[in-house]
Length: 95
Image 1 (spheres, rainbow, N blue to C red):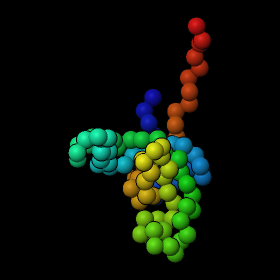
Image 2 (cartoon, helix red, strand yellow):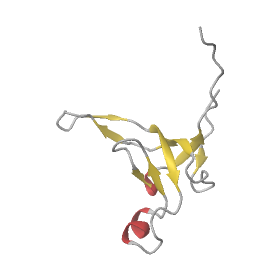
Image 3 (spheres, helix red, strand yellow):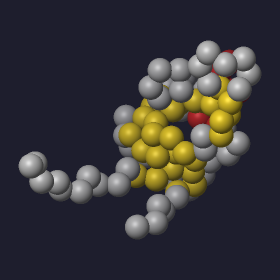
Image 4 (tube, rainbow, N blue to C red):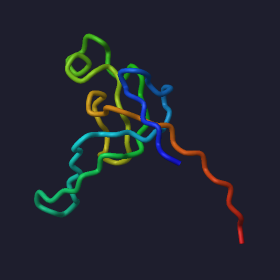
């Protein structure tokens, strides 16, 4: 099944919803390496609606919403261009 990407300009996820996000040219710096990175343009993030006050410095610069990740993978709202709901889990059989 192909992923259906939704532009953040058209629609936003529900507050606190975990989704796939697309971040063009996102460099993920490898731990313990000096400057080495790999591109990770698709990640799982949690949408945080109205994270910053609208007139705050960060709210004005990056947008009032925020993308929460795991560890140090948080992103400012304007870094993400598209998102998609996570695929439903397929039932599995315990052996």
